[in-house]
Length: 117
Image (cartoon, rainbow, N blue to C red; front, top):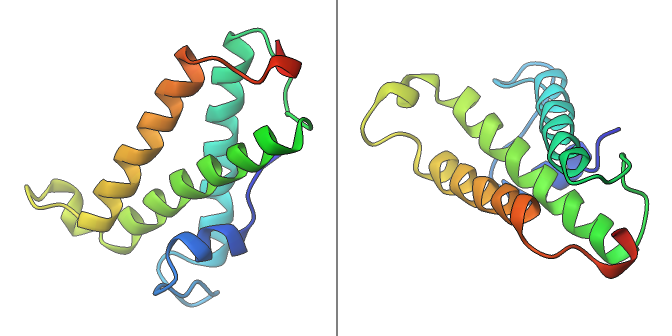
């Protein structure tokens, strides 16, 4: 179960439009959302938490944001695949991916909401 929806990714990348005829397509962005959610769940499962997380609401909202940031980064990389091998990369994609990796690090190591442990 994904935590984010296409609208959440769109909110992270408001200047991007996703449709059946864009690169990436809405189908691809939805797959990115699902892939990122699975990665988040694997991190949380490794910490002994049942997934998908359904409460508390504040933690769920955080996971929605993390899921959207990771998927938005993947969408940026898909939009500019030639930049993946470039030293300059995709500045927006690189920024979002770094942010997502930092969120994952925090989920692996930082304290979780008391009701979760």
